[in-house]
Length: 438
Image (cartoon, rainbow, N blue to C red):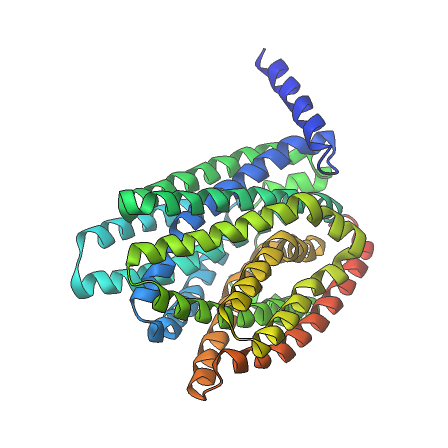
């Protein structure tokens, strides 16, 4: 009876999904659990993201570069530990351990932030800011590493946009919860919500690992059960030695530097516009809600069509082209509305189109690189870009460039990023032909 009901539900879900995306009947179950997995992960993050942003502003904008430095140090410490787990455990096991480790951390921060005051509370908040930045990159990187291991290159092109939409809806839920509840419940209840959502993600990982065996070819399914193996530092060494991985790292680095430029401007605006901490938290949540709403609209209407029509190479150039145009306009007219439009449209395009396309780059790589090199790029390289962006922003402000000067300075970086994205896309398409089973 249960199997019959499950089969009926699966056929109904397939009939609904095939009107939205190009999905095969045997992919529906894996797609559904992957969707729920990303929904839960980004819900958990977006519940606490506004809390993190408010703590960063409250601690003084001048201290943000040091918090970014702390985050980079956190990545240096965390990456070898994560690589050791990857080498010894199956993906489902090390992902579950990683997420439950973050749940225990979140519980500790909840107690510290609620029970301390004065300098202890201030430093607890700064530690939470650093932790949250590490948490964000690791949980999302681990998610996409699992996706590029479960789904093939061709499946990724068809399905990653829809899976990303699950994360967007999760971001909308998380932002809405914080924006609606923070004035009534404070931070503690929201942090408990985040922990619960992470446990939903763990449950989804375990279910997906069980049903993904038959999704790929028999040899790939068997590999899914085993530990990845390899050395603790192989993520670093492979990322440096491979021109393809090195350029993926450069793509990430340039994106992050430009994102940090905008983040510092956002922090300055919020500091002057809102005196109340809860109002600032709600403002950050509202911005996230706007970004995720726009992202969802793009994902449902355009993401799959864009990647199919334009291909990987051209799609990877869209965000750099938008950034070059937006920063140039910000240099010409350094006013609030130009900044807001650039920030929201840039983040939405990244989440809706660029991020799923960037993940397709990893589908043509060996399994060890999908987890270790990818994690190194998604975390350490990302936060290195934060560092470069943070300290160079401070230097440009000290030199008196202001918003307009920083905008013009970002244009050539955006153009370099555009050329890098085009090269990467062309290389991925060649590797996909050479390694069709990846």
